[in-house]
Image 1 (spheres, helix red, strand yellow):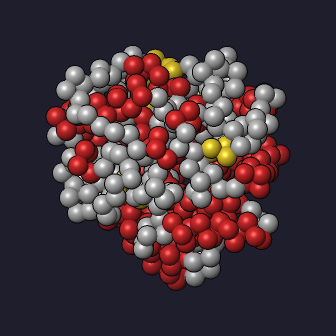
Image 2: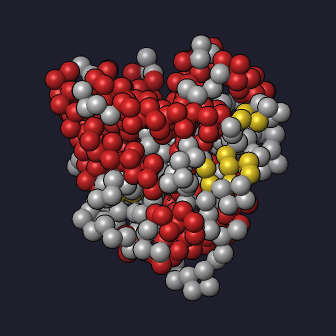
Amino acid sequence: MNHLRQQAQEILQANDRGGFTVPTAGLYPFQWLWDAGFTALGWMRFDEQRAWRELETLFQGQWPNGMLPHIVFHRPEASYFPGPERWGTPQASPPTSGITQPPVLASFVRRMLEGARDRALAEEKARALYPKLLAYHRWFKRARDPEDTGLMACYHPWETGADNSPAWDEALAQVPVDPDLPPYTRRDTGHVDPSQRPRQEEYDRYLSLLEVYKRDGYDPLRLYTQCPFRVASLLIDCVLHRANRDLRALSQRFGFGHEAEITGWLSRSAPAIEALWDEQAGLYFNRDLIQNGPIRVGVSASFLPLYAGSSSPQRAERLAQTLRSWAQQVRYLVPSTDPSSPRFEPQRYWRGPVWAVLNRLIAWGLEEYGQTELAERLRQDTLALVRASGFSEYYHPRTGAGLGGGAFSWTAAVFLDWAE
Ligand code: 2M8
């Protein structure tokens, strides 16, 4: 295992661009929000100073309204599309995208603080990050849940982190392809076999949504009623619920005094997440906010209420049963889509492959509900995939083949954080 640890460290070092870590060279040459969070957990295992720096650099891209964008374009790079020109956001220095991503950061800052060897450094860094995290979470509540429903509106499949998940098929199909869509050339399929990437009709709609944002001046409240793609995503809502619990703990620890405000948010999000439960399916479903109904396809995020901590022990037990039934159909957990779904595609990105980061989040949840055997199974499966196929972006749940980009930062980071 030691040589793999060594290799994982070397991947982070090779992907380091001076203060930020690219997910992988070529395919993703900038800093991504939730990748930065996982990557910081990996850096913590061998260079704590550098781990904190990852997050500080990410927050250089925070918008004045508190929004933390999903990509920070620290310096120009032609190997990725869409770059800053296509996003056309008001944010210039550094340029950024105009949407967010699963807000793992407050939880990871707390975790980094609690596991730090250099306590003084960790206290100083976490205390300094706290107001920025609070501004980000306040933005979520204000901009994405103005009616106080407890669920956040997401405006793009990219925001959910699980871009081409079959959960978004119908909602995305309702997005009209812009008749004046400026021509573009995809770069992703030049790096990765197209059979492992989203389809062209999805990309046309991903890009059409950018034209909507630009026309609407990136006004979040206008988009709240006008955006042709609006979903409540378990990845955003469960990660945010957990992050708010951790933000509240940080507020208390440092004496910032925001506990009552954060408790108010939590008292709305917990029942709203639980309302996504489907008794017959034995898991949670995402929700289409335009059609106002559940999206009935099981995905790996369907287990995340365990990570949020909103589930009852009974529901947690039922979720564990559902996960065991998935395990009958694949060799490696957790496939990103229910393997019995007709939409399951075991090699295509978020439509079937296993992702180390999802395994990590789900396992945290399982552990907290006392499902230690299943949590250990997820850990062992993740380590086995790395041993068999290296540090890939994602893996085939039946063959274990490595898919997507290689020498991948968040896979290396999860390995460093999780291997003994
Ligand atoms: C993938 O998404 C980007 C867009 O954000 C892309 O395909 O261009 C997703 O897997 C996302 O969750 C991840 O953060 C990003 C970088 O690893 O790649």
